Amino acid sequence: LPPADQPAPGRSPLRYPAMELSDLLINPSNLQTGRIWTTKSRPSATDGLLFTLGLQQQRRGGNAFVQVAFNCRCDTVAALNEHGQVISFDLEHNRYAVLKRGGSAGVALAFSSTLSHELFVALEDGLVEALDAAKRAAVGLETSRDAESQAQYQAPGAVLRGHRGPAHTLACHPSAPLLLACSADLVSLWESRALRRVGTLAAGSPPGAAPTEPFVSAALSPSGGHVLTCLPHAVVVWRSADLGETATYKLPPSHASVPLCSVTVDGSGSHAVGAGAGGLLALWSLRSHLLLKLLEVPGGSAISQAAWLPAPRQERLALVCADGALRFVVPSADEVVGTLRPRGGRGGGCGFRSVAAD
Image (cartoon, rainbow, N blue to C red; front, side, top):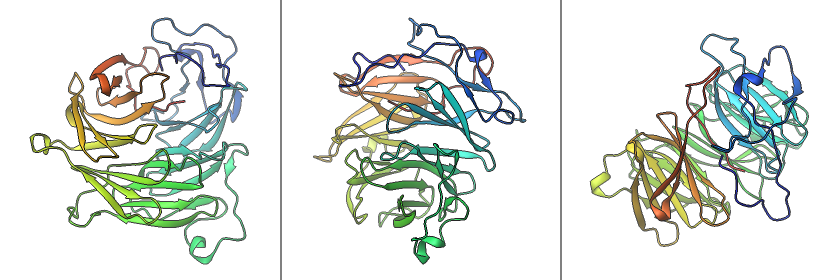
């Protein structure tokens, strides 16, 4: 990411080396832990690149990473590849560790917002696994789980069930042990300490929505008080406490045929952005429930993920686009302020597929 103007209050800026993709290629089948880098160099002066990490291609079809996430301390990054392998990168102590060796294809992951070592991983078979990054193992079971919870995990590790398809979105409450999991057919809320499901929304919600219209994305508000679900033609806001509907946002008739692909909420909890095909961005106020503006990102590429980036002066959106580029937009100024594309070398040309912000 482009370097921040100032470090967060009370924190010293961490300095990491820049390296080419070919300088570090991990083979998880041979090494379970190791050093991330051996030599340090300056960050790139052209695009702010700090370092790149890659996997040796051991399987047919490659080992592309599909999602990344920071933990709540922002000192560890977890990466999930398409074969279900999960690797953590401890940037403070210069160590990587293989947390999960693979299995079902990986789809999504998210760190707990309250426990820096707790990580949730969604797999293609519809399961969501809870991992302990510190112990490099599945989260252990507790004897106090009730009968309902006992039916929703699989020993010896914690496995959350209930989705018929893969949970393409995972998100954690910022201050409470609550996990949001969203698949095409179901949105579920889990009490993450007891691994107990506390609420669900089935496809077709809200009443009146087309029964065949799937959930394509979901998000939690920064306060954790609301859940936002993204359907192809609407964004719906729900109360987290009882999953009662509070608002429904739709595109104007002039853009009603444009399918939405992603939803995200800014850091203040004031605005929601729906991103869709053709580079369309819709900005709604979560207070007045009005559509504030429509933007079309140059290039016309569909947006698969939108994420707000913390900034000292002006919040920006990072957009993962179907053409493989990562674009940065300031919605208030209707301006694209930067575009990044993957560098060459081994694994080059694959394009960006996920973004996470510290």
